[in-house]
Length: 120
Image (cartoon, rainbow, N blue to C red; front, side, top):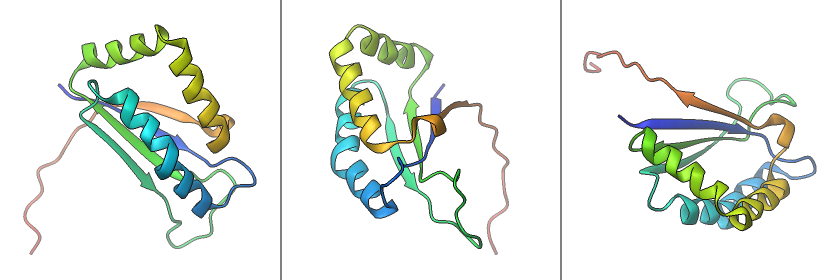
């Protein structure tokens, strides 16, 4: 059974949304791809744009999803980070360049899906 982690992040103060997206996609995502290879089946970044209202100070700039094929693989990934403090520190340092740490939220998703009729 797929295990999905959903992370909601806000950019650090002083960084524009465009700078945030550019840095994330140019640098931070490459780190994610490297460390998740062999563990994750999907790594998606969804950058947000306010819809029908102005962005507030606590609105996220990105919603990130990581899929693991199962619980054991997800646990193996986190164990690999615990066993490699140099890589864990590299991630932390890069996150400090990008994110407002106080606004970082990570959730494990428990998905339920409704069957919907075709769109007419």
